[in-house]
Image (cartoon, rainbow, N blue to C red; front, side):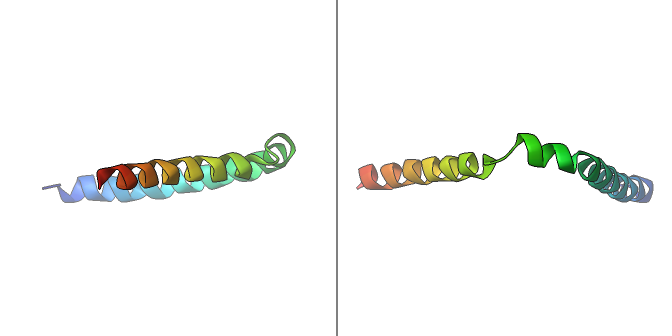
Length: 62
């Protein structure tokens, strides 16, 4: 399906991308802690909303 060259490129690209993301995150870590305090509450609310939608779907199905 893919040539050997394409697979090698994909592997190197993924490795380089992950390394770049780690470096970028480490540089911005102090800013994240300063500006994004409490964002876990939004994540919890989002998952609770999705769970509520599933409950409503299964409750109204029967």
